[in-house]
Amino acid sequence: MSQENPLTPDQIDPYDYHATEGWFTRLLWHSAGADAQLLQRCPESDRVKYQGIGGVVLTTGVLAFISGSYAFYSVFGPRRRSPPRQSTRGRCGRRSRRAPSGRRSSTTSTA
Image: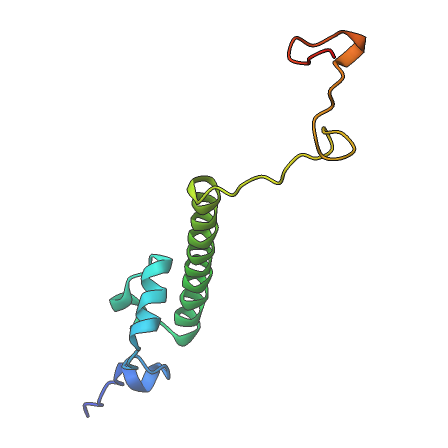
């Protein structure tokens, strides 16, 4: 009986399990909650899927940070002066000397 060499996993499975990923890919995997060591042994389609999920989570986090920062700036930021209310004043921009509803005001003087 002749002994045949068994097939190695590289001959059975055509995927490249020894691909090196960059720091951004690992960041996206971490954002998606996936295990980087496990994904290195998975097919490329799973790697890309978790990169996409991580990208969505990371983008949502960045937009939430920007939105929250603007909200805090709006609430606690520097106060702006409100424009003067000229519609409640008289024609010349001064207060009217006549008291409302025909009554005399104690601050007006009679001549």
